[in-house]
Length: 398
Image 1: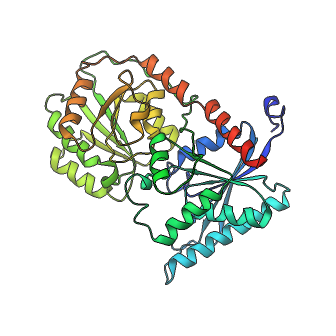
Image 2: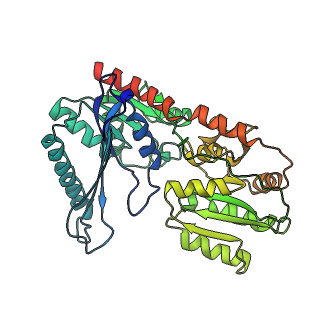
């Protein structure tokens, strides 16, 4: 397939993107926001993605390399053998390194040596980016989205991890973060300016508005899309609030999309709260295209997190014209307005119930077309691509 004419008008830099999170066969939603940004960047640069993780099957004894190619964009996803013996972290680090060497050799064979390294999420990808930079004299930039800088988890890391993280990031030729909230917290943690804020992006082609539901007998659908990690996402708080309001709105169901370590506990809690009634549906892990189908069908989305550096799912719901209930947990309050949703305090069940009631009885009127236009204007691929293009240009010139 030939590159579009618009992609051939100017010099395209070869960029190697190393990432800690990325959609894979075990978790199609892991780091999907990174994949979206990478595809947006491919509007002006030739992007090669490297992602490696241990296979989940104990019987997996070989290095499986999955290659996906489209014009200007290539993904190398490596599944290396899982280690169940002693010294597991060291063995996994060695197999990650071996995975990387396999891909680097392919790049050299294909005469696709990068001109810039882009590392997503500290520490391992940035450590690898720094090593390549030293060995091959290639500049590197760092992008961060981890919520650990905002909730104390980074401060609990060992001194050597914290020191390496700040040292390697500060030595980079460019640094980006996903929100002003994350930027403030990273500056407090020892990271240096400039930290360029580039928000996550939505897939404007996948967005759309479902027909309005005007008949009162139709089931109203509340949607939650999240990793089922309760100490961060507080899904149990949503279940408790929904149980208390469901009697007022019996034609309402709660759909929960996602998976995680607390899935069994949350299913058990839902069973106790609703005594076997099928009003809470756990849909499991879904691909991003399937998530968009759930967004189009829902009446509104709830994000009840205690910490979020951005919350892409809020932006994606808005791109489908859906209003959002979200906590003031860091990222959402930077872009959710009175015209696009309702902001509530963290860990406030009363305010959550009040917001759900206002959504369900439509005491607050939201305009779907306005919400969608707002999201596309703020989180378009073109806007993010332009910002990253400037970061890349500055990094290569240094």
